[in-house]
Length: 191
Image (cartoon, rainbow, N blue to C red; front, side):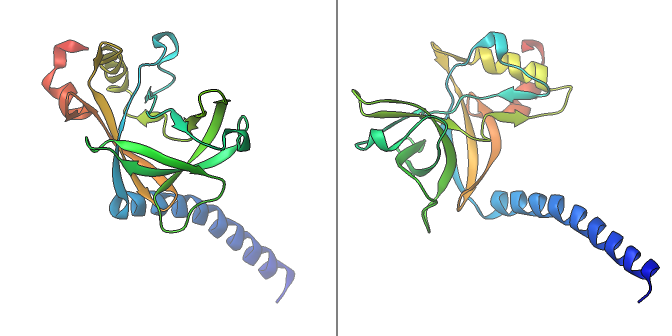
C-alpha cells in the first residue's frame, strides 16, 4: 500500500469512528426507551428564578434523600447508583445506594449532594435526569405551566423514566396526569 492509500484509509477510519460514537449513543437511548423498565418519578418544586435555561424544562426529581445506615461511607459529589423500587402509588423509590452498578437491577447513576449523619440521610442529585427537552416554541409555555403545577401547594407533575440496567432516559413529563404536549394543546390560553 502506498502512502496516499494509507492516508485515505486512516481518514476513513477517523470518519467512521466519529460517526459511530453518536450513532451508538442514539441506539443506546432508543434501546432504553424500547426495552427499559418504566419508573414514575414525582417532581419537587424548584427555584422559579433559575428554572428555565435554554430550551428545556428544568426538573427536580424525588426522592432527593435516601435513608442509609452507612452515611459516613458517602461524600460530596461521589458517584453512586440508586437502586430503584416503587411505592404503593407506583412512584419510584430508592431502595439503597451502591458504590458500583448492581447486576440485574434497575439502578440510576446519581451524585451525592451532602449527608446528614444525625438523620442518617444521603442527599442525591439525579445525574442527567434534570432536563426535559422540548421544541423552542413549546418549552417556554411548558416551563411556565410546570412551575404553576408544581408549587408546594399544587404538585400535579411527574415524569416517566425508562431504565435499562444503569441507562436512564426521560420518557415524558406529565401535568395533571396528561403528557405535557397534550396538556399544552388542551390549555392554549394557560401559557
